[in-house]
Image 1: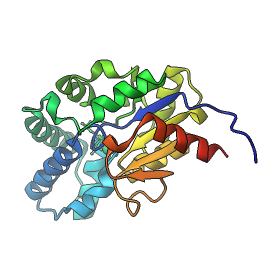
Image 2 (image 1 turned 120 degrees about the vertical axis):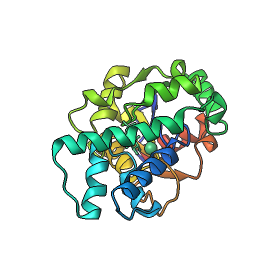
Image 3 (image 1 turned 135 degrees about the vertical axis):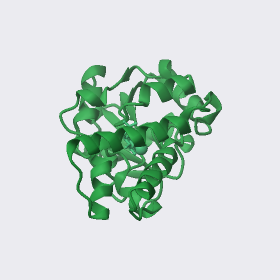
Image 4 (image 1 turned 90 degrees about the vertical axis):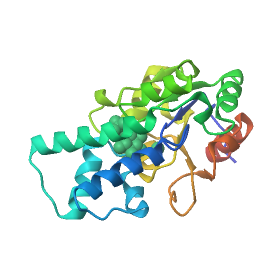
Amino acid sequence: MTLATEQLQAVIFDLDGVITDTAEFHFLAWQQLATELGIKFTRHDNEQLKGVDRLGSLKLILQQGGLTLDNAALQHWSDWKNQRYLELLVDMQPHDVFPLVPELLTHLRAAGLLLGLASASRNAPLVLERLKLTQAFDFIADPALQAQGKPAPDIFLAVSTALAVPPACCIGVEDAPAGIRAVKAAGMIAVGIGTPAALSQADLVLPTTGMLTPLLLRQCFTALQR
Ligand code: BG6
Ligand code: MG
């Protein structure tokens, strides 16, 4: 048996679908856009959009509908979707955080772990502010500064660099297949929130973020070190 050489030092969270149910708001806004454009778009189709940035998601929907748009139209519909999304966010309150997540973040910090946020959403700072969770994170990455979006590892690597923690000492928590691929590509352990069928590349999958504990994360980390 090889002894574990690394210690878990940081946990890096996705936001939408991990901290709060904004994944549903993104879906509803994309669905409205697809209806406007006469494209059939189901919840199943939406799975492939999770974690993908705004323009990339729009292009995937257009591709599905067999539509091509010029840059001005792409910008228009991208802004249109964001307006719908922002309307859905209007009433967001601190109690809209997923159950037990504030407690989890507090316990992880008390256990000496650094906390990062790696969301592809340019609305992440606004969502965190509405949830009163901005201060819960040691570093919040700006997706606009990343060369490539998920499934590329860039945003997870940016967080580990900012926290001065090697990727091998981080766990990434994600609800999207593209996000899990990004965590793995960054060389981190991946915890999936959802179903094992949807997140088959994750090292551990739980139905909800609130089921995580510092002990469970440390045990998962140690088991995968061996
Ligand atoms: C990701 C979501 O977190 O952010 C995607 O999973 C979304 O659904 C992406 O498209 C970009 O979000 P925003 O707020 O910048 O349009
Ligand atoms: Mg997500």
